Image 1 (cartoon, helix red, strand yellow):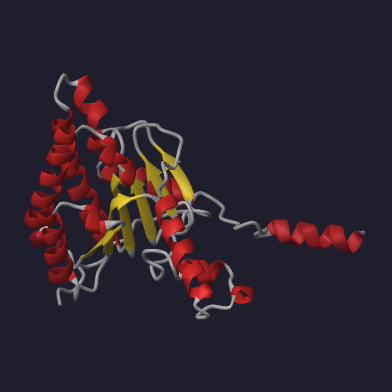
Image 2 (cartoon, rainbow, N blue to C red):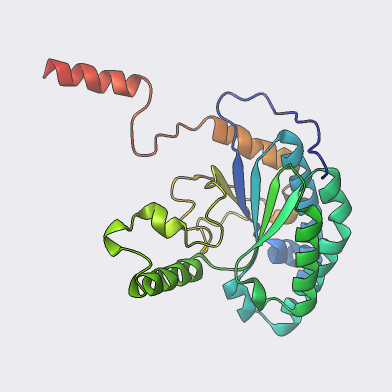
Length: 260
């Protein structure tokens, strides 16, 4: 087991996000602006992954989920997909030392059997190698789509009801959660989207129900530790109510109610 590094959390005006999720967008656009092929942007994006993973681990983030490849991405040109899968395989091999140094556990999230055999093999090796680390959980969402995840969960739930293993009258939101790909990792507190797009893109639709959203115009290859800290400070200033009331709002409601 590799212990986690010394934790140094930033000074914040509010809470610290224990689980951060990121839609890593804009690699291709970043490359095209520089008159380079799209793969140039994907390679540059790996440097951002390395820096963000290291920074999060050393700040004591409990979980980091990176949207690396969606189910919709299989529609891209075959040449680009092949390049992305090669980059994934190289990343999984080259970054093992970094993951071990920082006590990071790596886990895949999604329809992992869709991956090419070589990439899946390296993923499983890295998962096994880092499985005893006691630091941050790094989840790579690969061939992931939230609608697909929910559909597969609903299908398995329906089968269990049909077979008598589940009472339909006892189904609640936690029941459905138990059928998701990873029901144990807490929901993200902060969801970051790069490249200025104002949408979730089929990412963690169930889990991100109450996540604080942070959108930056910077493309992913430009998103480094400084931008990560900006997003964390912005999160700390948010007031998370989860549909309820906090602080003085409760007092005001109570006073108004008593006066009525």
